[in-house]
Image (cartoon, rainbow, N blue to C red; front, side):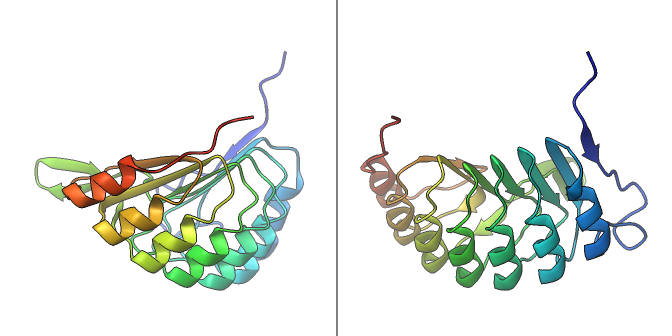
Length: 194
């Protein structure tokens, strides 16, 4: 039996030399049958995100991103996939989060995506340092089953906002959690699976 089709573009040269950023190239990549697509796109444009929104496979992962515009987030939110993963982000605005909250995926992952050297002897998983209360409030409106955030620190206000998310909330790479934030998260009521 043949292995399922998967496309993974590895970028060993570096993002300045090779990346899949042309909307025409992206449109061609998403047009074929492929259940899983993982692409290094450091600077995702609105046109590129529009092309990716046509992906009909199960899992779409965009790596090497550092920022996401609200326009690109709006386009990505139209993607009808099981999982959408946006790796490498070091910032997510409230406006982009609001657009992502409308995402049609069952699960949404923000941050993560490999390791970064934090000292000569230490590697740590890439993650957002923190998110704002506005960003957390927007993400809490995501209707998918799972929201995974690679974030190091959350405040009590962010925890209260995230506590309104009804699905499985996964806070990966959390380094600090104030007592009040822990209490806010502990009191959340997750929806029951049907």
